[in-house]
Length: 151
Image (cartoon, rainbow, N blue to C red):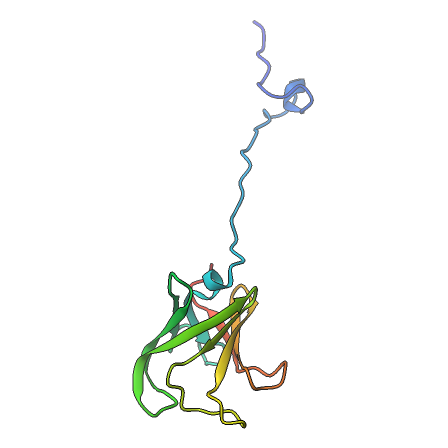
């Protein structure tokens, strides 16, 4: 009785009749978005919270036209104008690879020069973002937010 050689490539150990057969795995490409609009979309929490992602959260939703963004708060917050809200609307003025340059319509806070405050949402890493107020010095940021729905 003849032994059958395992199937495989002649240059592989399996092709030599020694060891298990060689298996050709398909090539798999994982698409990781580098689009800032896609990266910021999702649920986030302040990293400084005692148990981030188990308490207060914020869900960022970027409009399809990329000209606006809504932040849905898991609990109502007091906005800068003193009103209680569950959603904060932002206008996206422009974007760069790791930043959304935004402002809140009817913003009541003012810069030292009297202009309404503008905010830059900065991607620090795929699962870390922070805010930079446009009139703050370079490198000055709010606390860090971490992604709760890891991508």
